[in-house]
Structures are given as structure tokens and as C-alpha cells.
Amino acid sequence: MLTDVRENIVHCLKCGACRLDWITCEPICPSGIKYGFDSYYAIGRVSLARSVMEGALELNADMMKRVYTCTSCGACDVQCNPAVGVGPLGVIEELKHEAIEKGLIPPEVRDFLKSMNVHGNPYLQPAEDRGKWAEGTGIPEYSGQEYLYYVGCVGSYDDRGKELAKTVGDLLLKAGVSFGILGQKEMCDGNEVNKVGERGLFQFFAEQNIELFRELGVKKIVTLSPHGFNAIKEYKGFGADLEVVHYTQLVNDLIKAGKIRPSKEIKAKVTYHDPCFLGRHNDEYEAPRSILKAIPGLELVEMERNREHALCCGGGGGNFFTDLLGSGENSPSRIRVREALDTDADIVAIACPNCHNMLEDASRTEEVSERLQVKDIAQLVMESAFSKD
Picture: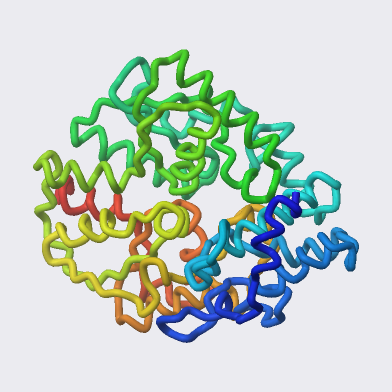
């Protein structure tokens, strides 16, 4: 409840540091950039939370529609560096949780959660179809291998996500990694459920997954998505004892060990987009860059906003499915594509299936898809290390 973060709420100085990136002095909040009003920035949302907590404002679904445009990217926390406890994002997520508890949520969030409750995924697809992406790939089911390859909802059901799941799986096979998948036994990791404030359902997914992992003897997990990586790391709070890595961390180690040897030149200028749930939330910035630097011929160039200062693609906090942030010229994904173009890059490299979809769609909307390719890091490694050309 909001009273649990009262100290954090009342200590907000209203300084507005959460609005601007202190490196570029540009707005950093995705929804704030798009809409401009304080109620779309962390400073305004903390004020809303205080008014609700003190009874000066009644919590309602219309107000929460603004709050739910928050992508949980964590950029506000980087700028704030709070003196006490959690930062602005913690307050915002507590406000979301209170709205869930009182049933005062926008229809888009309600429908998303209904899909998760009824189908166990946001695509309204049957659980038995969850492993169909792997048919004909040679990727085995988990039966005690060193790693469980956890794919997640986007990798299991989304068309572009399935292709990325196959690419990462093929890369691990060719590198000789001992791994398997759960197939239709896999359940949602619950990251987006948690970020919209439905903590009870997140706990359900966490406990069900932990029970399954224990039954199968899973000790190590490699994830396709930073969202799954983030969620499964949080399972520790429910008693899990797991070693969890994102696939870029494992691939980077395999390259260093000589088990993957990028050899074919990729003569291209490449910029890398930091996913929020790999970077800001889990402090992994170097493994993806180390992989890119290992590819001969590839020139890595940085966008002005990178690492903890990177602009979110707009797909976090459930927005990938609810689309409450919406599109338009000032949508963060389109701005991010324009920032990539400013580097004169030929390729924007991605390490997240959500980011891949968001930026690929944005490049088409910006009508620059022929000039700027969107490629997952695994695709670039496959091309360099295992190309038949």
C-alpha cells in the first residue's frame, strides 16, 4: 500500500530531476516525452500518490490510465538517486498495486490481466501451443541438461519473437551448450504482470515455475528476454535458488572461451540499444557490447543516450501488450530510431524481443527500414560465426 512507501513519497523534493537526463539535459521519461504534462512524469505521479495517500484525491481508473503509461524503465530512479529507500519508480509501482487491489484500472490493463488469468499468456493462445516454435529445430526438451533455455511468452507466440527464439536456440546448439526447453510445460515468467501491479498473480506464476524447476532439477537458466531474466531473478524472494543468465551473458562467455568464434567480417556500422530490464534493472551493459566488438569488420558506435541513460523503447511495464503509451511521432520507439540514425549506423543491434518489435515497427513507420536494419545480437553472431557463405 502507499503508506508502505510514505517516507519515499514525502521526501520527494519536487526538484524535477526525474524529468531530465543529467548527461544530455533532455527529457528521459518515455511517457513524459510524449505527453509533456507533469502527471506523465515521475514527479507528477509521486504527487498523485501523495494526494491519494492523504485523501485529497480519490483514486480512479481515468487517473490510472495516465499512470499506466509508465514503462517501468527506471530512468527516473537513475536521475533521482533518492536519499531514502526506493526511488520514484517504486512509488509508481505501489500506486499501480493499490489500483489493482481496488479494481480501479483502465480497460486495457483489465483485459491484459484477464488474458493472463484465463490463458496464461497475453496472446490468447493455448498452453499446448507454447512449444510449437521449436518443431523441426532440433532443440531438445529439458531432461537434466546444464541449462534450461527459458523462452517466455513473446518468444513462444509472437511471430518475430519465435524467429529470435529459434536463432538463439540454434546458436546455443552450434556452440555445444547442454540445454533444453520446457515446451508446452513452460509458464509465463510474470514480469509484466508484476509491473502492472498484480503481485498476487506474479507470485502464482513464480511459485508454479519454482515448483516445476525443482521437480525437473533445474539449477541454471538462460533466458531469451531481459524481461524473463528480470522476473526469474526476482523468484529468489519466493525461495528459488537458481543461477539465471541472459543469453548475451552466456554467449559472451562462450566467445571468450573460444567455443564461438566470429570469423566472417560484417562490414557495417552498428549501434546498440540497451534494453531497460537488462541494463538499468540488472546492470548488464558490457556483455552485449563485448560480443559486438568480437565480430570482425563491425564498427560499434554509441547513441548519445546509452547504458543507464538510454531511452526506453516504450514496451515495458506491460505497454507492449496494453499499448497505453500509444504511437505517434513522439513515441519513444520512433525517437529511438531517429537517435540510431543520428549515429549513421547501418544496423541497430537488439538483445530483447520486445525491443526488436518496437524498433522494427518504428523504423517502418519512420520509412527508414531499408536504411537502418534492426537485428538481434544473436543474428549477427550466427552470421559471423556459423554462416555457410
